[in-house]
Image 1: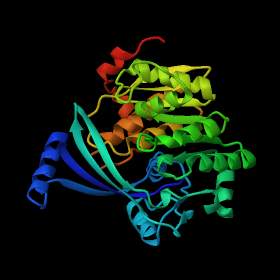
Image 2: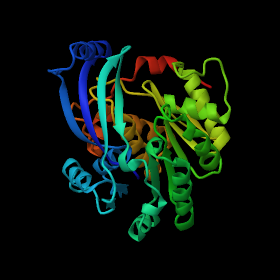
Image 3: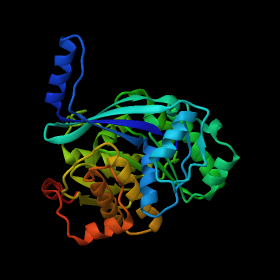
Image 4: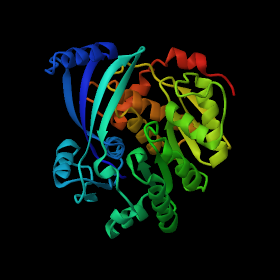
Length: 345
């Protein structure tokens, strides 16, 4: 829970070419940029993660709020076997335009969003059937909190409920906080530092923001920091200060860190065809491995494989467990930079 977004992808060439096209059309007073591929996909961290888990063979329960039109779009865009019985239709459609372009040697996505009901989802939106589903779940994930107006309250109340009614893992992925840095203080103080989160999933950008909020300092710790050693330093610090297991995914390596362990594994080298939703696919592999109870290094490799297969899919398809097994048996190459960067802490 709690988000479903209608995702509209615009697939462009390089960032500079895209901006040149936009400026040309603006300078002439308006017009059309023709020749760019467009895709309409299911979106939202929760929906994408649930879809990926379903493909891996699990039976995820999706709890989201949208509009009646949004519910119909969701039904049309996801696997018919995905459980949509907990989709609330008394809200607003959330939507994102994702512009995918090459920038500084990396495929990147620039998202422009209307948060819709992802902004106001709260504990009060849950009915008794939702609470029963939470009670029965082995893991409860709160994702995409950067769109919510009061994410600390939402996380605190949902995870308090989980602690009260079950022994499930609590899993949190805040999302990119850079456009709303004010949400970090309450999330860190009232949720992370209070022990509500068993597993915190972050990318290299998000972990820097959280580490800074917790008090980590350093001249290299800037928004544009591209030093993988700093990413790991941040993840270690967050794990130490919060007691959460920190699962970090980056373009070059992924890691799982806690007060008792640190495992760092290079990512697989694949041709990247899609970037939006990559973290959701990785999270699904991480969650699947957690529920299987496999070793930390196996779990990170599994998550890396799920993520690699997703980003290399031209149709943004999530892999099945058979796909993952076949991929790993093919002895795929690891990123060269990831191998060079990794060294003992």
